[in-house]
Length: 339
Image (tube, rainbow, N blue to C red; front, side, top):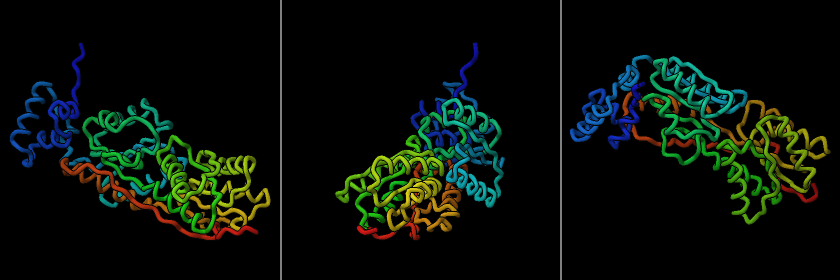
């Protein structure tokens, strides 16, 4: 009969402490109370837990290698996250290994994390923008290795870094309201993405707070083609909107083309605001008003926070929040009843 393999997290659960505290006991760190140390040691003995080499290196960080688990590398946001995480890690003297999954299913995520944890990495960063398995379950597949999530759901009390997407959606929508627009439609991102959900919900809330009725919303898939098709659907259903909030710049590009096909002028007939501030946004025709996310800062903070967890298991668990900014260009203008 195969003997059950207990993890550091099993010990932490039975002892009623964090996995970081168990790691400190294993590594004989001085800042653990005698009572807690004794309780953890008793659970370790009861379970027959044997710390592996990876667990013993949590504090020492001897491999100087980090891992990144990512999804949807064909999209601008996740790609920029990976690029900036890699840059930040290398600037601090760490090597990286990557695992890119095709779908954020439990099987793919668990297999990838299990594989990465077996390669003697000091810590793992998971880019987790899509609704999937819980953090606690992901942690089990990491086999005691510190894990930081990038772009998970807002408000989670887990080691994570996010951009406040609700704030970004609010400043985009308020910008159009302040320009005098009352009929504001939306092209959302796929609504199984945390960011897309947050932007969509905040678009509705911001309009309602201004005593305005949200117009139509059509869901896209982040691509320019989906933005084009979504705009055509909006025009077919009700072409009376004078402004359009679009959940990313690529979809805004497609939407702009669909509007121009119907003889609508931007911003004279319809104002548009995008999201991300991709490098090409300043060269759209007209240049695109958009919400900028600081991916460089996201990467730097994510890596530094992971290293803090590696070097000091008692580092407080928190969600670091970054705030985007509105970049105003010529695709948005005051509402004019005459066009």
